[in-house]
Image (cartoon, rainbow over all chains, first blue to last red; front, side):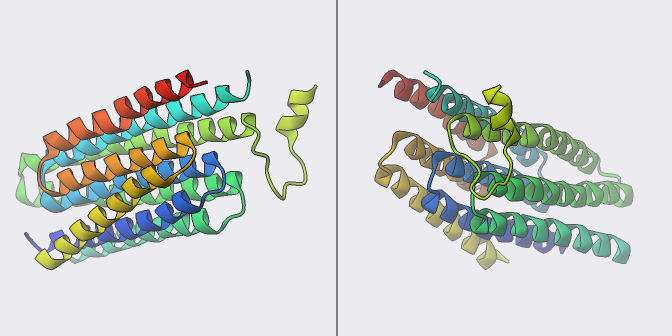
Length: 90
Length: 120
Length: 79
């Protein structure tokens, strides 16, 4: 808990507020692609926040969680997009 | 130490401001494609800058203290940043393609060349 | 600084509960699965903030990748 902890944890908290804003779009979104865009935005913000919190606590394995999460959320987004693409063709 | 603090404040400020603009653009824009434009590009840019802040911080701490924990932290942050840079635009492209194929058209668009290309 | 960390915990849990309620409320199936994915993502973030990164990795793998894929397989089978 040095003086850098505060510098890195406060942007992490601000990213949480932006996640709340994106969740409003997830609630309101008129079509399904809007909701997928909101999910993608929340994923990016979570990965950025995980890197910041890992630097704040000075733990290496926290940044590893961010790497794993970035790749897995990418797979999830691609899967939903593929389902949505193939739905109206038939 | 003062220079490091100034660089950290500038980079984190740029990152947080761009992430904020991305979220506000996601709320305010009229249809899927403009929302995708705002949220994906702005949040990728902001995440690049917050990760740069982490990388510069850990390299400078490694330079001061000589602890090998910090250089590992910096390398892993670089790997996470590369993953973010590669996966985010690809996902945005997949979403836009799926939205256009599933019948959601741009609302106030004057010209839609993908639709014309599909008709031919 | 501990109070700020507690505020972050409260925010995360609030967003998670809202997303889990949305997964129940939505009428269409695909938005419901997306809301469930957001809830499991924030559960992973909460494990992460509670200093359990290995549990967070497992939750991210199961919640974001596996559960979503299985549910979309199931939705594809309903028509």
